[in-house]
Image 1 (spheres, rainbow, N blue to C red):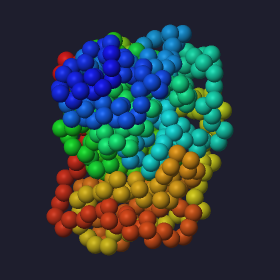
Image 2 (image 1 turned 120 degrees about the vertical axis):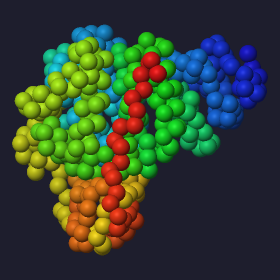
Image 3 (image 1 turned 180 degrees about the vertical axis):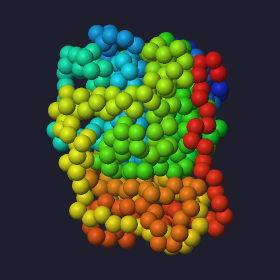
Image 4 (image 1 turned 90 degrees about the vertical axis):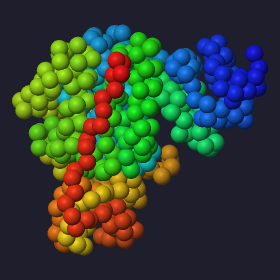
Length: 436
């Protein structure tokens, strides 16, 4: 088998079999296949696409390139949740304790962020003392005891994907849907979950800007998951504005607490209930989505979900009293408003610009070596469809300086105010299941 022949076959639109795809991934991971040949192969996939069978073979070849997590010591059906990323997306910190509170085991591996804010691990580390450095035995014990634990991702999970993604990033092949789908699903499958709920974002603040592409990606990932024995569901949700009101690490922890107290952002709460309901269903803890949702709503109302968050934070060394006193979380020295310059209705919010503004304040990483400021960020007071009068606060800036002209200019550029009424955007566009 020669790599150049496989490049030519894929370039000409032919379908590759499992042995051929295994040859490519094994050879590239070991260094026997050079970057320039893998670049040509990725570009051939970019233009020719891949069949359903090819996507499955590629995904599993990347899964088999490294370590696979064994969660068999954890009782029950383990359901993982993955988001394709967005602005103000605090869902994991809400959904994980919420579904754990009704008996669904949440054994989650999360990462750090590169972009507008930190990842789930960074956000949780805004809680004083919280840590993710726990061994496998302790991890399994915590999930079996409390139904929840979150650790950092293993360094040897899907090494083929890490190497291929770095190559795609510099060869113009990041946007290939088969390559995106296999990249995401290889990590989820290697992480050991029995079932997977995917939150596929679409809009200005998401990787997928177009609904048709988001639908194609969702269907590809659901197809891969179910073909390899992981019951998979995808929810396609809006990211044309920040999901929650908070954008920033400690600020998002505060908002997660507020949602679990029953007083958080409507959109954030609604999406968490939707994702959580599918997780409860996949874990076979409810007979219908309606029953699953009622269970989660009752858990919030009774305080059980909030108590599960408290137990989870304490079990991993965190100061759980932040739930009762959020002032114990990191706090920025300067807090001030950005006010509307005219009357009207919020017609659009550039979620990507809001995310970039938060990153410029220090809430995110511009490079993987950047140091995150856990205290800074933004809290939005006006979303699309809201009426606004001149002088009303659009959002609050939490910063390390009393003024940030570049950030303020970016915020004004992100907000578009119309003299006419505007409807709030649809939050959930579609749910993609195996039957679709």
